Length: 199
Image (cartoon, rainbow, N blue to C red; front, top):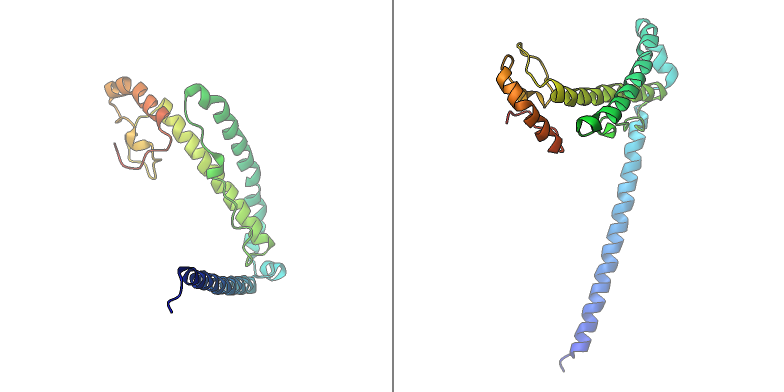
């Protein structure tokens, strides 16, 4: 006798339930294995950690003696950060320039690495802050230069910011006078900095 549709549907449902249970068991096993590997990975990274006293003992004295000069930069970077933040908050809305997102430049994701000791974590924090502030300041300065003085230099400059290729040629007074306002309006409507390619 042929099984009825209800019986077939019941078997299908039972098989689906069984598959779901098997899949759930495999998923649980996979998660446990992944957690185990993650723990082993963290343990492996921790095994590479150099203790504070060992780190200090193996540091060269000239490096240790220059540390106060290096760390004095905190004050400079903090003042620059404060000035740039205040400057763009006050001036950019007046000029119609999009503000630079500070959070895009200040990234602190290295201090939780398990293979770094306390001094190395502090150094990573400091480097992230210093380079982030400089990058933030460069972007604010580049947008300011584009607004006020988008003229290329007579000499080639190294590592020009991404707005530079759109600047007017050095000595081309007519293009500067005729195109300055147009360039300002184009950039006021753009949400991202231009690519390095010229338009």
